[in-house]
Length: 190
Ligand code: IMP
Image (tube, rainbow, N blue to C red; front, side):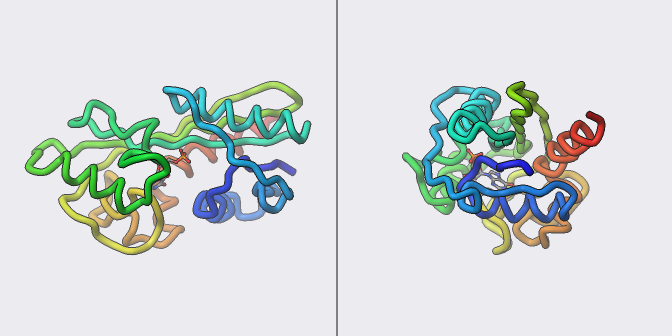
């Protein structure tokens, strides 16, 4: 059993749909842990490590976390590590989207990527796995599924935003799915 160090129910749902029972995962809530995990660093890698290390220090149990950012080329990689709180501290998804669309108003280059870093702590050692999904930022919000920036991101190979897709469809393209696949491969081989 692995504890998934997150309070984000959207991430838990996606993780379960990807793992499909292959590995037993407990969210912080399911593990009875109530904590706001800090994300104080300037990189996804350090924040992911902070989250898994925080939970490992509390529980002494194997666990993993993930940190994800949307990196937009024309905004020099922003919102990146600040994706959760781009508009302001702990801002609502819609405010973050509004800020991105305003900043990109009139921009031709709309290339972007989601990057997920998973930090796994297994028997006191840390391992990291990366998943990247390249795509384009739309000019306005399209679709109502998903969370975060899903409604303004069209992954390469599709003509729909993530927010127009079911979870299964999103998993065919997503950064999170790619990182989790590496995690599964690693766990199956040890
Ligand atoms: P964090 O990994 O919890 O720091 O989340 C970063 C922020 O990125 C979230 O609050 C969402 O706004 C956004 N985000 C993370 N994963 C996704 C995704 O799969 N789709 C859309 N937005 C996401």
